[in-house]
Image (cartoon, rainbow, N blue to C red; front, side, top):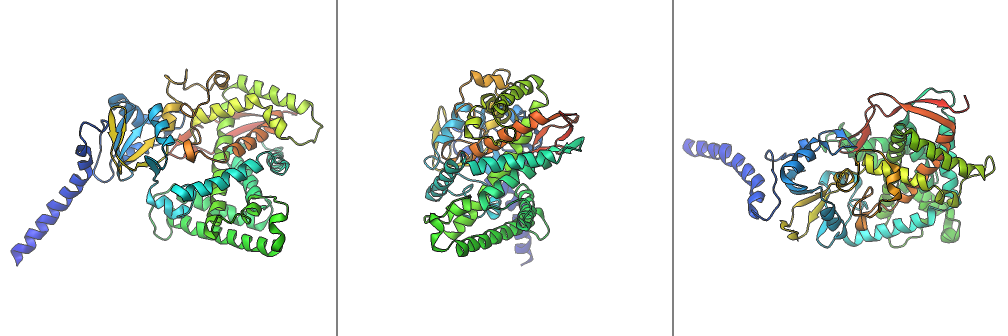
Length: 475
């Protein structure tokens, strides 16, 4: 009996680790000679920690630099507990994005699903994703040029900037967060910044955001667990607001004036109640995170390019000159902001708010002279293409004028993803940034504190919140 016990113990001590190691490295040999070259790193963890090592977001980081130098722009690795093909290649990235739900499928790590929810547009696939995306595109197309949205965005920008009048320094990321959140919560839920529920949602939303980028350990008190709980509270608040709208609107709801996303969502019969709640949360997430980061990125790069700032100022002074003193901007004014669009595009290319996306091969996929095996993850790295000197001349230099000549094709420039998963609300974010800049550059001068730079964790964050020294132009 004792012999069997020690045999089982020995088998466990030797066999289990051997099985883990074999299971980790076996995919490398399953299609040897067909998959791209690469390395798998340590069992279980693979090379994930090295891949996630923080680096400036306007660089590709040491991991990609070393692997591309050794294996080429397409290589294999073991990331997020899965064998993975990493692509820094423009053509393969485009191929993956254009074959969504045909050859590849969105496949984020399961803990992300736990926070976002099963019917979130960010993780949904196939018909569910198409249905949610169609609703999102319809909402964006009917909203982006509406005076109500444009006036709200400009009014909130002015309120934020007016609060700086007696200050000499601001933590700009905090100000940009305030601006982005107040705009999106007004547009989606019709709430103003001074309402108690706006403050409640913001507090829960910040908890939600911190957990979204934390280690996925569901133990009471951890950022991940608090994020899951915060999502439940936000969902409950949204459900309450929906019920209030229904009671107040009654039978005339769909014929009444549609002032925000929620008002329109109440008339959409194709979405379930859970999908509507999740859609509102997705809208808050997309409208907040992307917009505040883009605003911060533009302000950061403009501080380093006085020539670009001067040309931008001339463009906006020209627009303001033909308007009355307190007259709001309109859609026609936005379309005149040509150089502003070049600045925004260059900030997106240089700063790389979205570094990569997660996809999974649905079957063996042959591309050029190699195979991506079924079930393997694929990570198209957008930042590697944006910062590739063979694609963008002087790629590490902030140069808005490059967009006068460069073709803004989705092969070369994918700041918001691509294909059927390209961010549907990207245009709304650009409008908000443009209107904020309109008033910022005409009223303030600023410089960035030494040591500030955008860091990729892989989520993007400024080291100290982007501290700005400011002075009013009228002083």
